[in-house]
Amino acid sequence: MKKSEKVLTYFNNSFNCAQSVFTTFGPELGLNEDECLKIACAFGAGMGKQQHVCGAVSGALMVLGAKFGKTLHEDESKKEFTYKKTEEFLHEFESQNGSIHCFELLHCLNMNIEQDEIKIHEQGLYETVCEKAIKGAVEITERLISKE
Image (tube, rainbow, N blue to C red; front, side):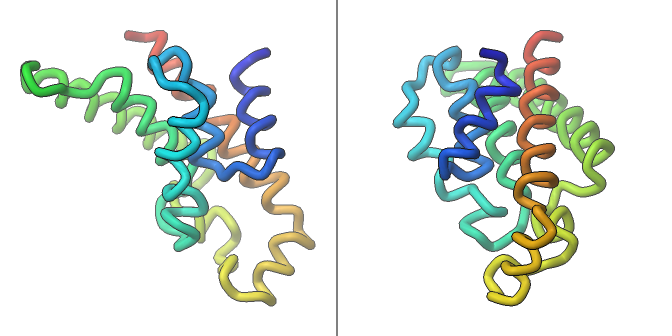
């Protein structure tokens, strides 16, 4: 199964956007599914349902960090390389989606306000905006990893 399909399987089975993106890459990062789901859980819905940075973005950046990030005994260049990949990701994601912020992506509707949550469902934003965001986040991440 392609990663762009696998991410939707997680998302459509009640996992949040961050969990869906990060867990899609977990096995190739040496992490099991449950570890990924737990690590990424708090980042969903824009950081714990606060609608800040989109969880798809957070999940993808966790992947880039796990893949390229600096460890205890490595040179600063690893950190700088990871920052470069992060910048590339953010630029491309924002170009594709118009924002990296959950609140803006969901048409400035607040998922913590009942009337807005109803509008989000009526407009099908989770099925359109969020699915596009997580699928795109996976595709961008795959490209950035393969350009290594």
